[in-house]
Image (tube, rainbow, N blue to C red; front, top):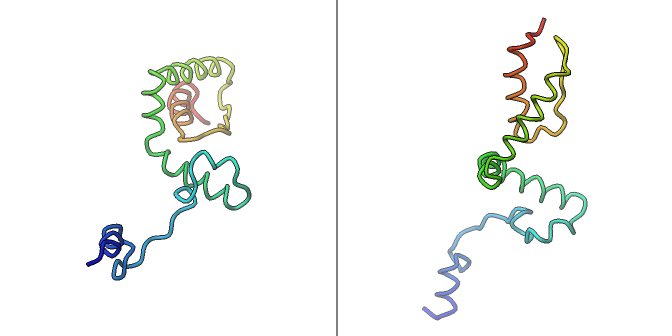
Length: 115
């Protein structure tokens, strides 16, 4: 086997290596290039990036911020609950992973049950 054939075989790109999966938009671009993308390419890049980050976002955010994001969320929710009347509805437009909505519903529904 020649050195080029051996290198191609080791990388999985030589003859008989089989089909390779196409790169996703996120894999095809360096993260620092994401802001330059436009249209469908940008949408695919951002969607795939969030799909990869979402499963560990809350844990990582808590760890990196040393718990400060949780403290901020709890303070914001405590402030808001003072101004809600019984049966009030709240729309979380920046829901993200849903932690705030989950916690808010759990805390407020116990104080202000829905009719």
